[in-house]
Length: 356
Image: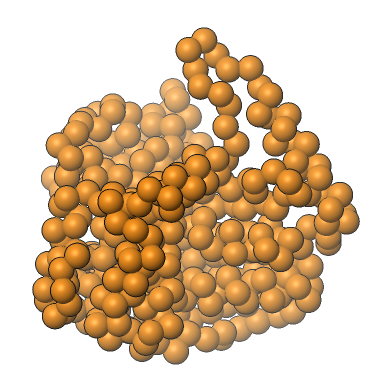
């Protein structure tokens, strides 16, 4: 087990050694450690090696000039200047919040960025301002449209955080696929099988191989096949892709640049880099803030009272598992998968930093 503060300081040092200014290194470390705390290791420290290899290959700019290139009173388009995703994403969400403070709502589309970690990190930034936060991003094309074997879409997550009065906030943070690439990678590292309905092989047949992506396979849309609503998952994934790319000028669908250095850059582009989309909505733009938050409390209390099925656990509210994980891990420490720890130490050795 590793203590939270130690891990954050160590990860910050790694990114400083990669050439990031200290403020940027701290942001990236904060986002990755937040994923670990919230029980989402697929977007946590296992990304250190990916980010390092991208920086080492010259595919990421560690001294970016992130800037607004177009705006109205309630909207903006941001050019991430090929930054590490958390840098351009946090900058963009801060602008969405500022816009919302002035106009009631704020919307920001971001292009020329990279993998940004967990979407929930950015949506939750709005909570302290009595705002609802929204964050989404497109991603590596690893997902097939319904009926296809062509990997045209990413896992394309969306997160919505809604403030409350006394209850913990409502935080829905989920991929628009039944599983994220990082979680498949963790299954592979642990020698586990993937449940059927999550992925298919290169011929479009169901498979339980978590490493199928390495052999031409693909992730299915949320819902799986059409009998279980996979076509609706396809629609959700497509919407996130469009908001993240067409609004911003980023690459869409199969043209999203790979976020791992071992895959070659695509010859064709239809935009710049990877794209994100952010929103912030002042709840008092709709009704008095305490009135709104009190009703959110009532909504949450109502749903907590839903009767559980036989041998099923108590009903949870979106955000409960992550919140409980964070409370536990801040107290007990964070466990790192041995293979991920070994990869971090390989990076540390390359950078001349002591091993963890």
